[in-house]
Image 1: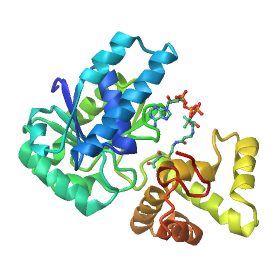
Image 2: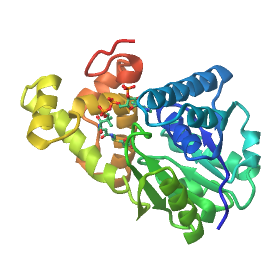
Image 3: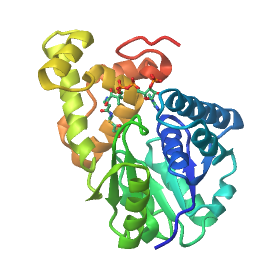
Length: 285
Ligand code: CAA
């Protein structure tokens, strides 16, 4: 099995930043790529902040924090990924940009490097088909916020080799995650269930004429959810949920997968949830 020492992460947004944090904490040399150095610096500062909080809470020593921070390098240049044993992609949830990126990574990375996608709802098989090494392409689907949510789904696409799955399982375990493996079907395991369920919740807003606050109180206290559906969609990102729901609808033609009209309206208005300061709720700072 390829020994993994250096991990590349493409895209250091909410998901990629969290994945890069997991990688440095697990002891991997990590190269994070963003489109501008300012975005890269901001992501590194966010990771530094979360690691400082862990020191303040006694979950990490100051030395461990320093060592973890030192393992992170940020770049704007994909060519740096020639040094990586594993690359995890966490860019926009759209098929064509992902396929274009995988074709680039295929050109740049060593032939034995494993290329992973964090896609939540697109076909890993179609992404892998953009490369000349589909047997080295695998899904590694993390949940938001990646450093806190204990699960990673490892997705075996049509041509993924057992060896590439084993690499992803090994890295997921070293990240401290519960690892489940599954085949490349729409929504994999969790989103196959969660996306239509969240869509149903949002349709209930209009059907039962309840407020987002009331719906969230109901689902937290009546169904034991850790956070209500409106707060959860705000956390995930309204645009991310819409993209995932549209992708699942395109793949399944199941009307429950389609994003509810109300969510499309919020999305079109540019209210993207926590990251834009406003979604169902308004956020400070
Ligand atoms: N990255 C790193 N660390 C973070 C973080 C982040 N994004 N967000 C928070 N933290 C750290 C902070 O340091 C924080 O401590 P301080 O506030 O003291 O600094 C610490 O974690 C704990 O944060 P919270 O107090 O907010 O933690 P909590 O106990 O309230 O739990 C939660 C937060 C884990 C998010 C919990 O509310 C939860 O489980 N919610 C459900 C989330 C969920 O269902 N996610 C899945 C979404 S679906 C998905 O992701 C699929 C997809 O494909 C789109």
